[in-house]
Length: 313
Image (cartoon, rainbow, N blue to C red; front, side):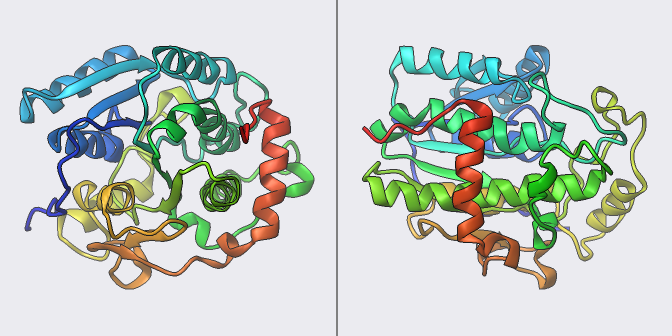
């Protein structure tokens, strides 16, 4: 099977990039390519040891890679605020932010440190708050922000009456909500930046379907062994059928985050039928992501829930 990592990235020397979820899978691949292009890559990780292993892997390919490991638990607003405060105190402008990390379908309902449903709180609210805290640095770098949604966002809705799924919990429906929210946030950030003159461009991407660790054994979220789904995905991926690989899955986000042709407010994903695999490109927004009114409402709700605001001055 041919290697899928064929996206050309321009020289990023002198640029600073922040990639969440960079300790494994797609995030590690994104961080590796950015570092290889010369970027100073900040890797916020929850597990320091895992982050050190990931950094070592990057340096195996790029011995001169400029990497900084930082502590971040997206399921804790205090942790998010602490990282934002630390980076803002350092004062280095950020040129690329890839909101990539995520958690998927824990078998039972779990909550974040702040009491939010785990997927909504981590995938959306954590990234919303992080972006808000980093706003001064993003403005200073006239940054490109790319937020990673999912094929799950093709359907579903925001459960406005019960955002935290305290009643009739459905893990997949909650995951869809979280990834619709990520997409709506990325698109609303584009509109608000343009209206307020922040100088930030924002777009969204999705990786298609690939054999990452989202559905693998994750004891920390209560999943003791791999799901049937991830075993099937690995089988198809290894044979080059239907779905993508970890290499191909990182390319839409890389295109969205680094290409001079990538448009503000646009959506990037794999181009095979069904958008589950193949080379990256721009695609039409799925119906749940075209809800501009819902995006504005979500922004207001997210500011209230997180206490993080996007100052316009």
